[in-house]
Amino acid sequence: MNQEILNELYDALVRDYSKNPRNYGRMNHFCCSKDGLNKSCGDELTIFVDKNETTIKDVKWEGDGCAI
Image 1 (cartoon, rainbow, N blue to C red):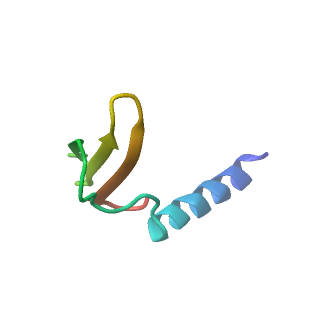
Image 2: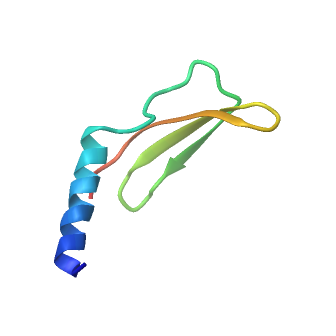
Image 3: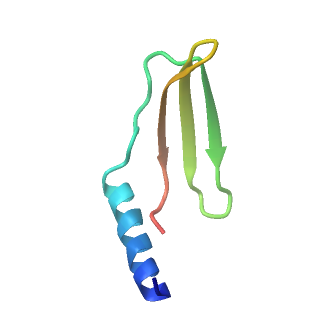
């Protein structure tokens, strides 16, 4: 693939994920969470994980940021 096609594909994927985020939302029950901040642009993110002793059962996230 040439670079122009790759750039178009990347742009389409970023727009799709921005408009239709996957696994977005806060969990009612989770065992751990972690906040993150990108100081250079102000993006904020919190990740929530629900797991048992051996298995990750669910992962969700919420945050604010820009789609590059």
